[in-house]
Image (cartoon, rainbow over all chains, first blue to last red; front, side, top):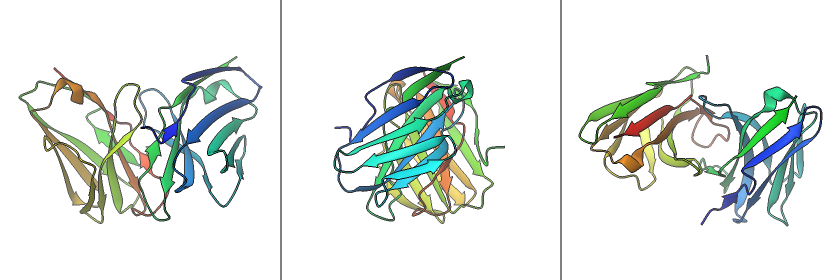
Length: 113
Length: 113
């Protein structure tokens, strides 16, 4: 049973528009969430994270929102750029101090010029 | 220079072969990890080393044998693998095993024939 789900395998967005990538989780013990970006033939690169004590974290064009009651988080990219085209993975870890990330299956984002 | 380097990038091996994957990190981190990514599946944690000591073996079959001679190097020794072991094997490191963000290498694409 997958504890972290990314239900959209792919997403296409026009350059300059907002990209919204979604992630749902089932385990209420998760208290830290991360987004990784992966280009073909490269390893995942850490993008942004959020602790469960917050509901929003922003870093430049990237904002992550956390809705604990819905067990849902989303990554917003504004404005989207062609270089953002990649696979985005959501990951969660539970109980403070644990390294055990549970990853989603990823969403492939394509930003169209 | 990603900070975490994996060799080889691609490997094709027969089921009776013995091979090793190598990972080296130049970040001064103390924790290193092996992950497996199969097609259309989330990243799966295989092994964790913290200060050269194995702290996690996530029910990985014995045909996968990790080795961590020092905090900068991690190996994954492979023998008598099965075709279903074909996957992308990713190495990662973090400051220590309680630190949240892990840095990934580019991965080794393994094909077992």
